[in-house]
Image (cartoon, rainbow, N blue to C red; front, side):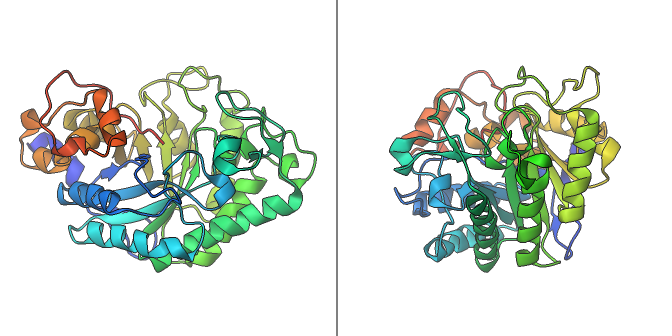
Length: 366
């Protein structure tokens, strides 16, 4: 058990004395169990409560749309107006009852949506069609400003709900990421001349609303959806510019999504993406991507690749993953099965089921 002690060391998040009680974060996962309008349901509250009771240090509420035209899928959670706040307050309280931190992940899908869901054409930095989704049109300047305002208002509601931190979803090819991607953002105005302009503006607006004592987490990825996706147009230098610009705007913690593999080299080197981030930044790093077992996480932390780990599939299957690791009962941690995603869509919490089978990769979904 002593070899896992580094999983349970506290981690300050840089502001207001907010500290992770341990190094395990429940990664943001889209559960598709909200109401049709995106309001929180008792099912979601209990889902979070079980993982908090199981010992996670923090929970991130996944892909919370900040505007109706930012929805990405049916029955996703939202925070697009004040009617959503009470539901998130229940989630925060469920986490706090068991000593876990809670934060929302503010999200706009941009081009990752459908006319049938939105009732209108999706929008993006430029005219662009993301594979699997409907063609998106370029946002007007006024729409860009409105989106910045919507992120800020989502942050305000999050703090009013009692959140300990706020996260911005700048990964996986969603709107914030679309503006940073040079292959998507072909604008000739201020929002395209500098690819960091929109992420920086959103970060500044959110920081102004949440104040100086609330940690602000920014989730990003180099790729959109797949580790095999090309890194272009990101280079080590453009990554440095991106990280430093956002830190100056108010980011305290990096949440680095490596999709299904956090142990691969980037930019033609053997250096992991989190290690590139450390090369340019001294901010805490939460890392997601195929850290399946307590030993995996412990070794990754010990190697200096991350300061905390974000787990998804491991916590889908076993809500007590952290507690079992702490008690030295790792052999009793239940393995993930592919069918568990389907169970969630049917309103079944796999963390309460008896499961058998081989372990699968545990990686964040959203």
